[in-house]
Structure formats: structure tokens, C-alpha cells
Length: 311
Image (tube, rainbow, N blue to C red):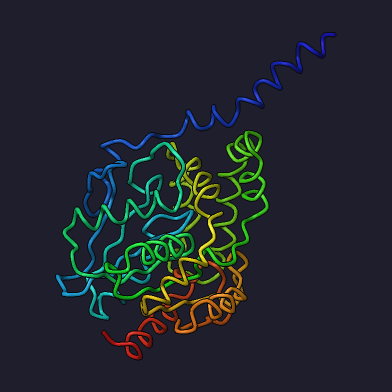
């Protein structure tokens, strides 16, 4: 029976390990926020970190990031977007970057509420252009469908909400209930850092991507926010939202990566059937990280869209 007394503490330690790892992570503090560029807005769900890029313009473009990387993922695009005549606003979703980690289910409504309140707090009364990447594409599309009077055009880059293929671990964590939560807490950070390392082997404007992702995941609440959005936002179908976007004649551009394994390029066919007015571009050889691996091609597609569909 000696083995039982040895095994039981080991089993308890293994069971508790995800929570022990989380307890060791750094909470978001004022000292950490002092390192942040930009400013903060106090919204109903918590503090939101945001940054304006470029001089004052009559037109604003808002960047909505995806599930894993916060607003710095757009660093290869912001200067080019400013040169296209926009004042560009980037911000961190709750649970990401320097924004608050908050409790509760992170549904699309949760995320669109943050976006709407941020625009209100910044006095953005005129319609804006929205650029959403990955899960940010789903957020941007839902916001455009819900508040079409606030959106003058929509740019979707590898957008979730039509066809989405999560990694095996994220699928297990999403559907696995308490066991999935435990598994995600145990393996999630390492899996995401290794995925970033593989992605950084290709040409990218973020060669330090693994270090950045590791730093992001070292903050308390980051893994929980990712899992909450995986479970509550990325399971919501958006075909009805895209039908509404088409009905409201919101100019829409969708940019896809030819080799994207997360949002496969076949999704463009589904979008074409829903919104025949949408402009669509495929970037050859690009995977899901196209905003940082192929920023020139993304900017070229946006530039052509602005030329072909003027204000």
C-alpha cells in the first residue's frame, strides 16, 4: 500500500498544476501599464488599452485583433494604413495585451460592446472603417451587422465566423468541460508558444513572435480569456450577420491566406454565396499569420479596394 501514499500526492499535484501555474503568472498592474504605448479608457467591462496612429484625419480605421496576439500583431500594417489616408486606432480586447482581464463569458456581444463603448468614449461619432483579423473579423462583422450606421466599410482578414478549424488542443478544451479547462491550463501556453515558434520560421515582421506570445501568456488571465472566447465567441455562426451586411450595402473586402489551416480559403465561396457584393482576395502562400507574414500584400489588397470602392 506504500505506493498508494506516494501516488495520491502526485495525482493531487498533477490535478492542481494548472491552477498553480496560473497563480505564478503576473497580474496586470499599474507598473506594467506604465510600459504601454498609447492610453487607457475606463469602460463598463473594464479598462481598455488603445493607441492612435497617425495625424488627425477625417477618416478613422479601427483594427480588431484575433484570439491570441493583442494589438501589436498589426505593427506591420499601421504605417501603411496611415499612408492610405486614415487615422488608425488599435486596441487590446479584454484579456489581452494591457487591457483588463475580466470574468464572464466572452461572447461576440461581449466583444462588440467593448468596441462600441470605446468608440463612444473617444468621440468617434462619424462612421469608421473596421479591419478585423481572425476572431477580430467575426467581431467586426457582428458589429457592422448590429450597428451598420457606425461602419463605412469592412475589411476582413482571415475572418472567423464562416469556416473555422481550431487546433486539436483548442477543440478538446472548447468541448471538454471541466476536463477541457484543466487540459488547457496544463498544456495551452506551451502549445501556443511552440506554434508561434513554427510561424516565426517564415519571413515575418515579427521575428520575436515566440517571445512576444510567451510574455503575453505569462500574464494572469490570458489563457482563460483565450479559452472563454474559444468557447463562447468562436462557436457563434455569422451567416445571418453577413446577410445583414450585404443587405445594408456595407462595402466589404475579405482577404484570405491560400495556405491558412485555421480559416481555410474555401470559406470565400461561402461568403460569396451570402454576400455577392463582397470583394475578395487570396494571398498566395500565406497562412493564418498573413497580417505579419504578408503585410505588403495585405496593404496592396486594401489599397486596391479603396481605389475600386471609393467613399
